[in-house]
Amino acid sequence: MSRLAVGKLGESAARAHVEGLGWQLRELNWRCKSGELDIVAEPPQDDAPLVIIEVRTRREGGRFGTAAESVDFRKQRQLRSTAQVYLYGRRLQERRVRFDVITVLLDREGKVLELRHYEEAF
Image 1 (cartoon, rainbow, N blue to C red):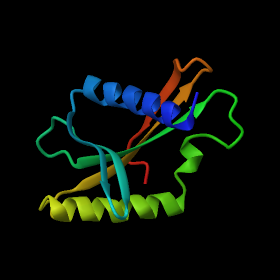
Image 2: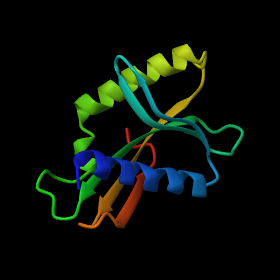
Image 3: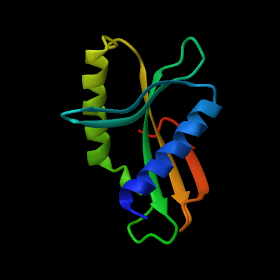
């Protein structure tokens, strides 16, 4: 299974999870020069912040650490920068924002073994 296929499976599982929470999806794979936002969503509560979700997927038995560990300081900085571009472009600069991380672990056939949602991850 290619890296791209693994990523797509993970993002699909994360999207289903977010929709299952009753959240409205605003954007999927939003891109600009500074990077990409995997999911931008809104929880149903009136006072809830806009949630930027980074999705990280790994295959069972991987050698490069956990999916959560891959959201290091550099990645966090890049996500914050990209989120600023998004918020400015959508005229949402005053909106509260929260950064979540969803990690997905797949078996060798691409079946989801584990999905974890880290709210307010950074």
